[in-house]
Length: 100
Image (tube, rainbow, N blue to C red):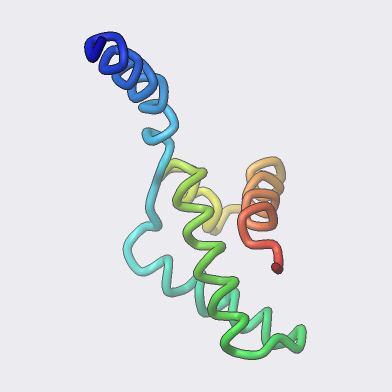
């Protein structure tokens, strides 16, 4: 009886591997830039510092979870950002970090 449940768990794990493979990270020093820019924008919109920090931290985690290293690098490129990629990033952050 234990073998089928073990096989089912292995099958589920194998199916989830591609999801984990999309996780990326910010290039060196870029996460601090993201956080600073995000917090500055939030404060300009009248959001208090604690709320801005929570939202920006959540946004950074959502980006890391949903985008590859290359996509994250492209989000901060100096030659312009692909509109579809930017829209995906905004949607991911909004979905993950909507106010409760």
